Image 1 (tube, rainbow, N blue to C red):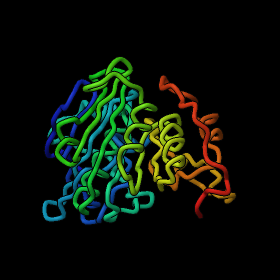
Image 2: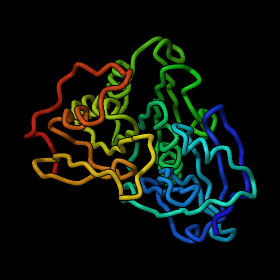
Image 3: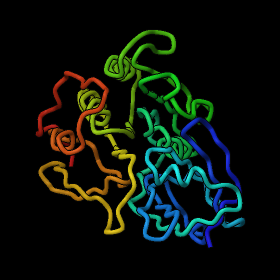
Length: 276
């Protein structure tokens, strides 16, 4: 049985749930995800697990309302049952003590970034976080992210905290003035490409999660193939992370479309510079 034992609305379209479920006995590391199925024969809603409590057999998740299925989930209250909690799926991110880590996310992808930041912080890294959104209200979880970051830069399409800038300008300035040892990026295809443009320029290893805010059909997970160092790899768009050191990210842009974010104009490094 999967039962909601606590619920808290964090914003108009972001809800935190604590759910009692048998999968809480598993270690669910950042980069993995679960599927919440509200009713039988409905699609699964992919979410990241923020925290597990094996003693209470509970997990804590954040649900962003994006369609009728996630809205139906968000409308449930404490004491309600959830038909199924499946997973965890995907591969965990490579979390270790890198040194200084730059973490980048935009819009709803920020929800998936939080457990990654918490793990990087626990591993002893110095963390610089860049959050981007169309409006100030779209910069989610600022208090929680401030607590596990050494420096947070929040950007909207209209303003930046402290100085007006764009994501591309902020990435350039941050990488130029700090010795960054590793980059993590969570967001749309455009956000990932913009981040990779700059990370590769400064020869910084980059790990990414492509955030697609949608439900998953019963027939299986949505898979696409990408080319990394000349090798084709299958990636689940609902949560699998991947090494984002690409000769070209246009295949991902073409499939998933461009968002409101303006692409950076810098060119990616030559394939000969790509580490295996």
